[in-house]
Length: 138
Image (cartoon, rainbow, N blue to C red):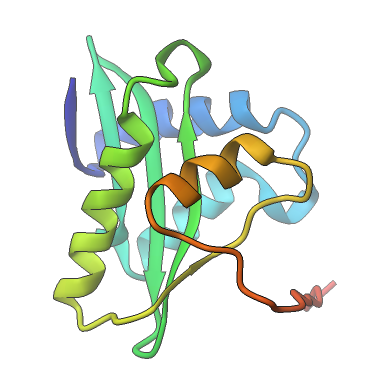
């Protein structure tokens, strides 16, 4: 398995992986749109894992100069529990540190206890916050 930065030729594989992970996304969460938008802003913060020519894992991060964010970690079900998510997160964290990031945040959907356990095993902790959001522009 090869873990590395995203390249334009990975587009189809990344979109397939994300669509498999979320087959019925909200209109603002379409895989192709997210990937294209990310490539126009901080393109260096997407990493992939390739196995036998197929994209089997991704992490997408961001940094605003104050805090870093992990926006998504996706590993295909056939490759889970093999350390791929941990390696992807370590690579994203290393890149964020190189940019000057000293605080990293992520959000987990309510009820995704498997993800919470994974992140806790990697040193993340639940912080007392209220997460709020607002859709803009339609």
